[in-house]
Amino acid sequence: MKAEPSTVVDSTVNIRLTDDPLEPLLDSENAAAWLSHPDAGAMLWFHGVTRRTTILKDQVNVTEELAYTAHREMAVKELQRIASEAIEEYSLHRIVLWHRLGIVPISEASVIVGCSSSHRVAALQAVASVMDHLKRDVPIWKQERFESGDRQWIHPSPTTDGPH
Image (cartoon, rainbow, N blue to C red; front, side):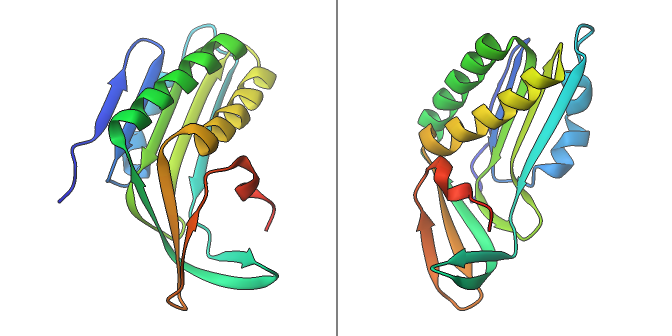
C-alpha cells in the first residue's frame, strides 16, 4: 500500500516525498513554471537516477533496482531545514526538493532538485550543497539490489557518490 505523498509548498519551497515516479510530476505539477522567478538569471535542475553498474571492492556489480525507505515526518523536516539554509546561504529565489521512496528502476529519478537564483554560480553551488546535505542528514535509506541477488544498504554519506 502506497503512502500519501508528503508535500510542503510555500512561496519559495516545494518539497515532496512520494512513492510515485518523479519525472511525470515535473509536467503535472508544472514545476518549471513554479521554479521561475522574474529576478532569476539561472534555473538549474538535478536528477539523481538509478545507474546500472556499481563498483564494490574493484568488482563491477549490475544493479537491478534501488529501494528507498524513510522516516517521513523527520525526512520532511530535514528537507525543509536544508531548503531554508540553501535559500539563505545562496540567495535562492525558489527551490524544489523531491525524493522518491520505494522501488526505483534503472534510469528513473530518485531525487530531483531545482534551484532558481539571480546568478548561475549560486544555483550550481546550491544544488551540490543540497545534495550533500540530503545524502548525509535526511533519514532516507537506500538499498541496492543487484542482479546477482545480493543486496546492500548504503550508509548515508556524501562519500558514497564517488565517480564509479
